[in-house]
Amino acid sequence: DQQVKQNSPSLSVQEGRISILNCDYTNSMFDYFLWYKKYPAEGPTFLISISSIKDKNEDGRFTVFLNKSAKHLSLHIVPSQPGDSAVYFCAATVDRRGGSEKLVFGKGTKLTVNP
Amino acid sequence: DTEVTQTPKHLVMGMTNKKSLKCEQHMGHRAMYWYKQKAKKPPELMFVYSYEKLSINESVPSRFSPECPNSSLLNLHLHALQPEDSALYLCASSRRQESYEQYFGPGTRLTVT
Image 1: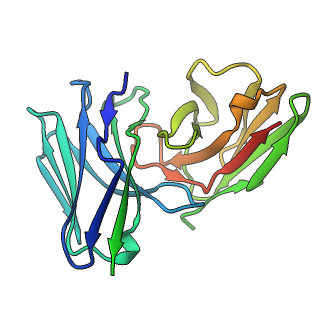
Image 2: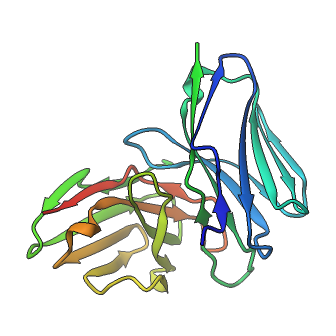
């Protein structure tokens, strides 16, 4: 049973426009969320994260929004650039300080930004 | 240096072979991870080492044997693998196990024939 779901396998946007990538989760224990970007032949690269005590976190062109009641988060990229074309993974974990935890990944969304 | 390196990049092995995957980081991170990723699937955690001790084994078959010789190195020893073990094997590290931002290497593409 997939606990982290990215229902759109792919997304195509024009350069300069907004890209919105969505992620849903089912485990209500998750309280920390991350987005990773992956280029072909490279490992995933950490992009941005958000704790469940917040509903928004912004870093330059990237903003992550969290809606806990809907168990939904989204990544906004504004403005989108061709170099943003990659596979984006959503990941979630339980914040257990002093304990062990693991990242649970979604299947990824392939973003293509067209010039 | 924010890099995690993995060798080899590609590996083809028979089902009776013994081989090892290597991972190295020099960021002073004290947690290191092995993930397995099949095509069009998310990375799946296999093992976690925290302060050079195995802290999580996600019920991985014994034909996969991890080893952490020191805080910078992580190995994955492979023996008697099956064709279904063919996948991308990713290594990652983080400052400590409770630090969620993990830095990934480029992976080793393993094919078992």
